[in-house]
Image (cartoon, rainbow, N blue to C red; front, side, top):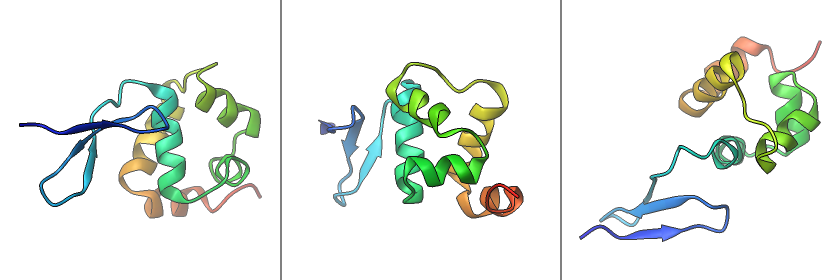
Length: 95
């Protein structure tokens, strides 16, 4: 029997036998952006600076007003799977 939980940020997670959680709904772009940023432990402002976009862009993504497309979506997926490598390649923020 699968145990699932709805989190406060809108994610649906499956409760694993060891007590860990696995996110099930990656389809919502807003929650995906929030999740990636939260895993990095960054504020919206710090995250925006690291990926070199205006803070308004991150806010709009997280509020669901806009969706990351093309290169931005690819970058978020890279940050999700390998944050250290992605941020190292970006050089840590604006020059």
